Amino acid sequence: MSSQKKVRVRFAPSPTGGLHLGGVRTALFNYLFAKQHGGDFILRIEDTDQTRFVAGAEEYINECLAWCGIIPDESPDKPGAYGPYRQSERKATYRQYAEQLVNAGYAYYAFDTAEELDEQRKIHPNFRYSHENRLSLRNSLSLSEEETQALLSKDHPHTIRIKMPEDETIGFEDMIRGRVSFETKLVDDKVLLKADGMPTYHLAVVVDDHAMQISHIFRGEEWLPSAPVHLLLWEYLGWKNEMPAWAHLPLILKPDGNGKLSKRDGDRLGFPVYAMNWMDPKSGVLTEGFRELGFLPEAFVNMLALLGWNDGTDQELFGLAELVAKFSVERISKSGAKFDYEKAKWFNHEWIKGMDNSLLLPQIEEIIRTHGVSAIDTVLLDTVLSTVKERMTFVSDFWPQASFFFVRPEEYDIEAVKVKWNEQKTAFFQELAGEFEQQATWSASAIEPLFKDKIVQSGMKIGELMLPYRIMLVGGKFGPDVFLITELLGKEEVIARISKALPLLK
Image (cartoon, rainbow, N blue to C red; front, side):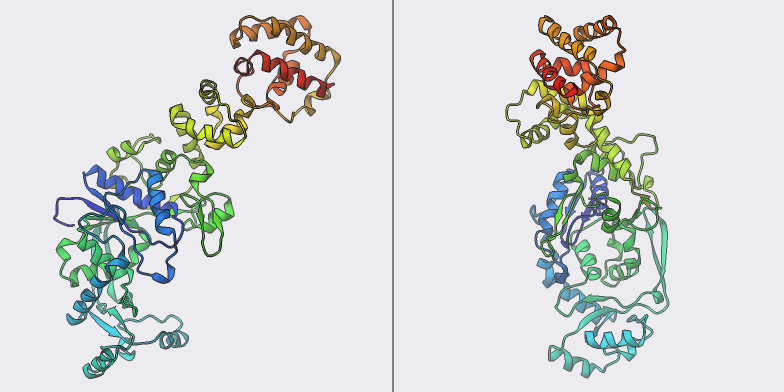
């Protein structure tokens, strides 16, 4: 672990498309650790692979983090003392380190063309460039120094590869997994610098983490196979004593626990895996995100935090500030965490229920306006929201749950009650409308006994009349307490709705 006192962590995504919830969780755990220790959270864009670069992806990453409240202390848009924060803008710094490794005997020039390597793969199905065959391939280890210098002087295309030791065991102390060891003979000679002069991830990540004085690294366990290369680069570049502490996070698994959760799984099972909507600029294909489906950022972050971590209690609802206070690496699981979409929706439901109306009303007002309602009674809206919050999983559920408070029903679910309808029931509601007209106190507490007393006088059963009354007001068999609905709609509107619905039942 680095001996420096300042905690500095980084989230380093590639701008290649939508941001998977696993990526957001990595950013979140980095952020929580940094903030808990009074440190800095850095966003670095790893765009060394220009063939995979997608326009708009970096802006998308920024928007995702902002939506989640995971705000970087340093980034391309908020540079600090350790920039640039895009790897492509640091290109000039990488070759010197690659050459340093060559000169020290830890790396070598490889002049093999892509076609030559493809031919090797045809001959050897499990071909890998390694200590087993490097001397039979075209590189500065197999060629004489004169041949090597001649090719370099002619600017012959070449890569620089790390020279992995043939038979060493190397390892490190993972903050989550404990001691992790690797046999170097099982690792191939990874490319460090590509023919276009851009570094690969392996070289860039080590050089940048050192240059940016990163103290701790939280990354997905899929990066564990790369760890031996990175360990050796920290050593070979003379920075072994400055190497950050590493924590390899457990995978987010498919709902059945069988393998890593992918976008394809979300498409197949009908749930999002991206934080926000992503429109692929090449294919034009839209992938739906949690935000656009109606997830609150607080619920999304809460759900992510509990995928592979808990605080040791039964508590499940945490705000971001509380997560910062309670987060601990010791409570991160070593095993993968199954993604449960129903549980994700539960988090959203719970956050909606517990959230102050004032924080939800701007979104609710926008929903109402999209349905053509321009004159909004904010007092009524606040009351209605309090009434239906218990029934909302998403903010977008407000309209199907509460539209009848703002517009009269256009359709009525009357088939079930129509078959048992008779003139006595018609007369009941005609008389009820007349009594409502005379009612001085318009409140649920006054209307409910009036309604029920009238049922008793009629000799009919309460179930025969309560459901039709609800349908007249709401249009269907749903909604909160029918007498509360009656109060909130107001006398004139209730009478008008009874008058509109009655002819449909005859």
